[in-house]
Image 1 (cartoon, helix red, strand yellow):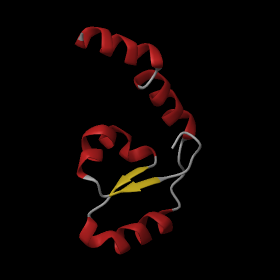
Image 2 (cartoon, rainbow, N blue to C red; image 1 turned 45 degrees about the vertical axis):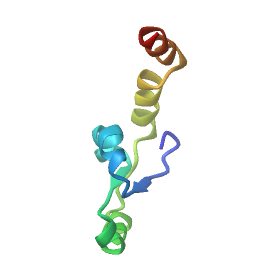
Image 3 (cartoon, rainbow, N blue to C red; image 1 turned 45 degrees about the horizontal axis):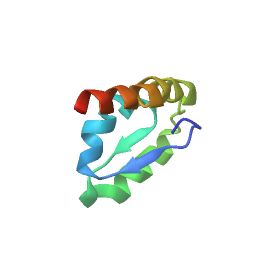
Length: 74
């Protein structure tokens, strides 16, 4: 994602995790219509903004944030 490579999934758990990135290279598709949806993604020639994804990953998935979550849990 952060390198500009699109992520395509039909995993329902991805909706909760990545829905906010849908317009920036994460494509959550329906399993029953995957062929048509992938074809539509390819034909759209939509540019993936790697810098936006990189910032989101650094902000939301940093080691510092993980440590805080672990400490809070225990």
